[in-house]
Amino acid sequence: MSPSSQSAQSYYNEFLRCAICSHDFEYENYLYRPITLSICGHTMCGQCIDIICNQTKCPQDQISFGMNNTPIDQLPTNYPLLSIIYDPMKLPEDIEQRYDQCVAYMKLDDETKSFFCRIQTILNDIAISIKPILNDKECQSVLSRPMIRKIFSVLNCQYIDREGRLKALKAARSLGERTCIDFILHHQNPQQLTANLWSAVRSRGCQFLGPAMQEEVLKLILLALEDGSALSRKVLVLFVVQKLAPQYPRASKTSVGHVVQLLYRASCFKVQKREEESSLMQLKSEFRNYESLRREHDSQIIQIAMEAGLRISPEQWSSLLYGDTQHKSSMQSIIDKLSTPASFSQAIQEFLIVLQRAGDTSKHLSLLKTEFEFLSQIDFGNNEQQINLTDNQQENSTWPLIVQALQCVKTVLKSLFDFNQQESKNNYNNKNHHYHHRSYDLSSTAFTSSTSCSSPMTVSPLGGSSTTSENHLQTSLHNQIKYKVFRFYVYFQTVFLLFNTICYY
Image (tube, rainbow, N blue to C red; front, side, top):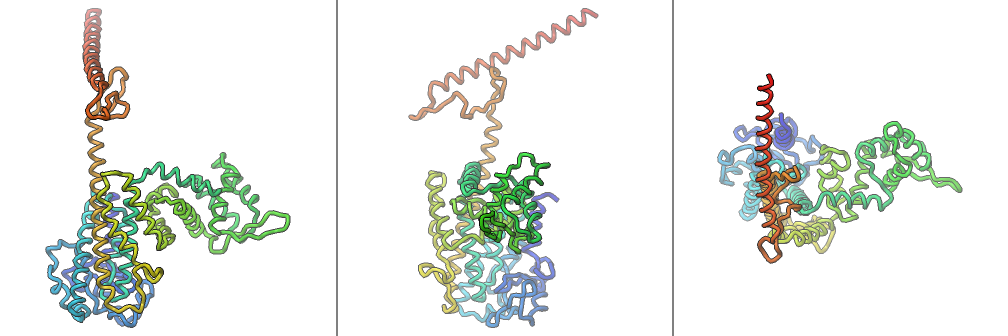
């Protein structure tokens, strides 16, 4: 199975199967239609819902269903997920037809039903928009896996109950922030970004020695301190350098000391101060295994980047810190944990700045400012100036808000999708243009592009080409004549040599 096929299959295994029995969701058999729980957000088939309907907690994570929520056997089918699996023509188009057997839906008043229907329409549109990404390998590079996971977080919400709608608002805000950051990343120079990152790390007295060497240093630090031992920094660094010497002979006490400083900044050590002697460092108990120590180490580097105002994608972080792309999910988890309510607003300002630098080619994206600002103002009681969603609000107050939030999500997602597709198309065309416009320069015996910056053809600031373009054309014509003469000379010499050989024998 190809990597792209494996990727598509992993989406189906994770999001389009029952969370309990792992049976594929189906429309024809009502027992296997997807139903999403309100609080935890797990999606299960109808058969498993019937089995656990008398329980009070989700069997997946033991989160309570909630005493005041709709009984789980009365919850509606998640049709947006079915829209990904099936041709929309095979599913009922009419909302009433879809939910006329759903007890929870039939209990809603007409106004609330209208809100619910609008939500379902938007979610269906979002689901259908990502369908090609899951099924077509040529489209899978349009959106990153962390982005698709966030989209499924929005699709896997139960909108009947207020708790589910609050969960959906959080997911919508997070997806909006991620979309804004993706636009920023597309306008950045990766090489300059990497240089700025390591410069920021070094400015704090820390260092990253490369994925393989950094991993080895962390494991040796763990080897020295995992039993609860307390060592001075000097002794710890010397131990690591000596152990590294056979594999990394150029490892220095300074570079290893900078890695130790990185862990010190992350508060991984208990420090025991001693009079007139060096302090002793002991690993905190929660960091005496590699996974937790590495996660705290990675978090510290990502935090340094955020403090320096650097935006780096989970894919880039995985590549920088591990040398592969297998750690995208854990990188996204760290980024989400370090994000603050103000980080979205900061991202919007950065987004507008990079658009100004990009010029006319990205000017139209500035229209997304309204959608991003609305999503950034969704808050859960943390800021009085934002859209607060406190417990004392009325039950129906979240319906119009969730409709508007999802509409904003749909708009920014479509723009990102179109932007990425156009970028891929431009890159493909530029690559082909470069390939088909190469010429052979006999004088330098090297292939050069006619559109290269080193070409003698230049363009006048006032429009049109300068006199150097004429010289370039004359030179090219002269080179072609020289090349034909050269080929004739080689051909003549070959025939002459062959004739002499025949005469000799």
